[in-house]
Image (cartoon, rainbow, N blue to C red; front, side, top):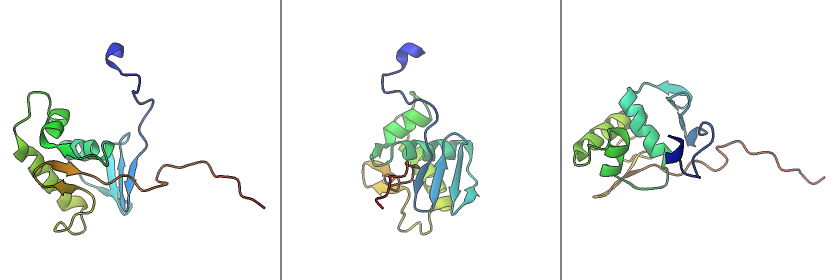
Amino acid sequence: ALLRRGVDAPRGPLPPYRYQALEVDFGARRARLNGAEVSLTRREFEVLAYFARNAGKVMLHRQVLQAVWGGNYGDEADYVWTYVQRIRRKIEPDRGTPCYLLTEAGVGYHMPLPDAGATPQPSAPTAA
């Protein structure tokens, strides 16, 4: 297993994804919206976490299927569509104009990049 790891393999748990009122905590396998836990099935969380880990990139249906369901999947785009709809029902304030899980028509889906400063940064010294 160690040989399969790339030199860029992440060390330790990923910091939570935070965008507006949504937080995806990869280590705890939980999502929160406005501070309240979102009730997600295991598969719903896996789909949401995959998009959050790849925030800012449009993910093809095939990529999502193979990452979440396994390498034998690739043509079942309706699986992805169904789970995106389920997740949107739980996290989007207005499913008609989603802000967290966005559609790239004819291609796939993506999530916005995390908010700037979402990961705690050391404070810069201030000039007196």
